[in-house]
Length: 184
Ligand code: SF4
Image 1: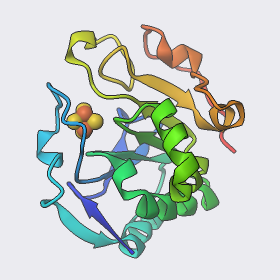
Image 2: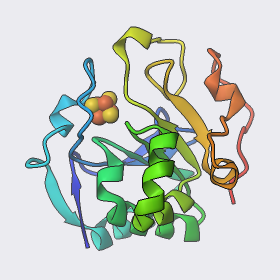
Image 3: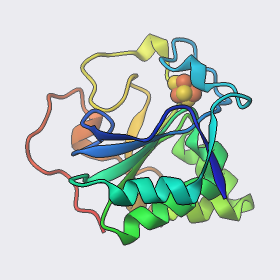
């Protein structure tokens, strides 16, 4: 299986979710949000094709990472590859965050028709959802660019069938020092 990346795997990020994270940058995005910071990731023709096995090997070789974040681009356009990598992460004690331009509700409804997506959603701990909205941009937000985007606890949301927000990160807040999540 292969995945198309916009950039090499990045380790030691502290801005793409809680803790020290490895970021998988996917290529290709259908949303084309005005003001997007990564318009070079929109094209599905560009980017670098890499085997999922290689991505997993790279992630497995890294030290001192708390988790993996899928960002883009639109990771949900490469659901099978994201699922395989996320499965590996969960088996190896790494939590999984995923940025998407879709809302939770959109993914939830699509997932009834698209079993692979439903499977993928099970391996994501935290979903940062929604298109970037320039009019709702705020520099006070943590881990998201615009106020409409939400930081969602996926396990609780899948159980409930509607988004359960991670309260502290969805407020206009300051960086918190304490650990906010318990991952399973
Ligand atoms: S969803 Fe993200 S990557 Fe895609 S256009 Fe919007 S901000 Fe850019």
